[in-house]
Image 1 (cartoon, rainbow, N blue to C red):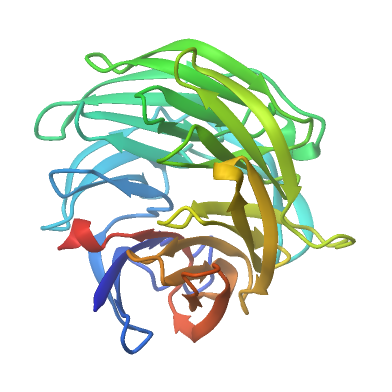
Image 2 (image 1 turned 30 degrees about the horizontal axis):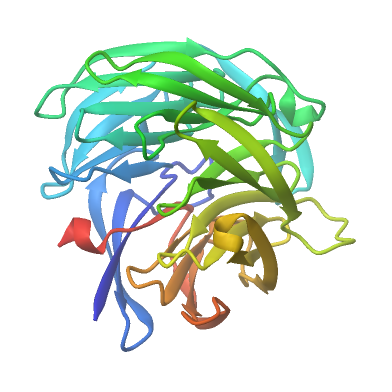
Length: 375
């Protein structure tokens, strides 16, 4: 059987020395051979560090830059590999406290332009949602039937937290819940936001705010398709929380949280990506610094988690990963060592074991399963 993944990341040498990446790639997994057998360029795009694909129309919504001078969002046609629509943000100067794991050093990151850190797409209503870490804002974009961007709105968020990285709100996630509301992560202000969406205009109306534990740093969310539980990844705390969502009111309720790294670990770590397995029996999290994947068993119909495995990614700075269509493999990107690693996943208990090491690919920070999308 052949499975497909989409890979994205940085194309600039400023992120990875001698970087050879050119944009968005397809990776082919032969599940019988248990190997990635091919990685091919799909679309030549500048710094597609995050993207999601549409449910229809073979379109990919991506963040991007232009000539290292502007940042914005674009729609890429997956058949032709061409950009069909793009929108660049005003050249507002951005700066924030950052951490260089390679040098174990905090530094003040000065940017001549800003670019969203997360983008999602509602292909039914032709709306894009983007979270901007650098400008502490949510962006929404309305598209026409041909996926051309016709209008946009910006919603600044105020706030901060107790940690050095939380000098501003630093919005890091914006995606629709199953009922059509938008949920947003404020990494810097330690808040989750819920909004109603006007699908005709792409405008937002606030519904609810949940204050999470100080210093938690909510970065991304995994959502159950079979319950009202969501799983919130805390980058700065290296923890994951179970939160219950009430679709009747739009309110969120904190249930419990768990550590993604071993007790007593003293080094720097930032949890990066989170995924539920297709069968929703397991939750997986990547850890930059500890350089590992954490495996949880999902219990009590989603209300509780139990950590069952911590496995090293055998590379540096594992940023993102994706599970194969049937959930029997996991492909992880080690950003700073410029390689991928493929794991077998035991679909009975969720445990991981290494299937293929040292798959060369530069500066990869986005991995998305896309077998049906690319068929």
